[in-house]
Picture (cartoon, rainbow, N blue to C red):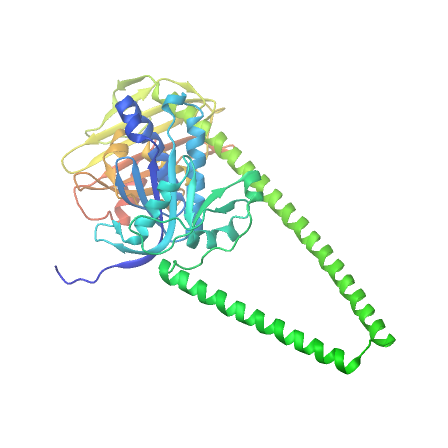
Length: 459
């Protein structure tokens, strides 16, 4: 023990796990791993896009933390939507479902970034209780998320007993569509639950106090009515008129309140319908984009490549590089015809790989770079970044380019980048992507990143 203080912080913890993973591995180990890698690439990207950090991974499970419980729920719904879209293009036997649980709590952060604590265990229990393809959250998360996500419902499941968890934890299933409109907007906990015994005693004391107060009020009312009846004997005409006027005013106010409530409900329903329509449009756009990426990935995997002399390459290469080029192909990366060029060198001190996606004529247009897409594209650059990289940073901008740093498995400091070519119509003439690693184990300096991106050019 070195006596260093324990690091704690409040975080939204997300637990993700594959449904029936062992059975799928038993039926087809290699095929299951390929499908899982495809899902994990998109899930990891979604976590980063929503401001999250992957803390722990083990086989088919992922543990991530977020600074915002609302963004954690948005990420959970986003990644489940992406899983649905990818599954739609697969045969039923290949389809993979995930369960997701989200909880807000204090966690212990180890030096290597792993998370520990009861909050992690609660997130895992919520995930295990979720429906296949569903999202389960705690009351702490639902209390903050439901106001920010009006198009979704948080269906209370009560307070399930969780193994080895000594406090009560409310569980809420996140639902959408018609079911979301049917779910009653019940109160949810805003703070972690108290131990069960204390909660039950507090509820019992509260009920006893309420009963005593009601009994006192009823007794006092009876005595007051008796005194009134003895002293007055009868009701005068003026009293009767006053009572009738009061009843008429109360009826008028009740009707006005009912009318206001109807208007408010109609406005809320219209707002929900508008939000639902916007969400449907967003999901449709995401699905279309996912289908485009899927087609693009299938297309580019089938490209025919051949080795060429680097002097014939469109990439301005350095000494020691080897080069290759693909055949021309249609679409996928934009509109028209494209060709890909690649150059690379891997030595004891440095490693560089560059790929140029080139529009072959003036009528062809590459799609513009989009920040929220480049993270996924950089993971696709080569088998090196897919299988031998860890500790990815968030995507950063440098001018019109984007980059993210990472560590190679041998400890070298690396970065992957995307660099746009000149504008052409509403798109680009070309896009260059690649990565560069140094021999050092410290983070790459900004000036080195700028130098490498600036040096790489097209002939």
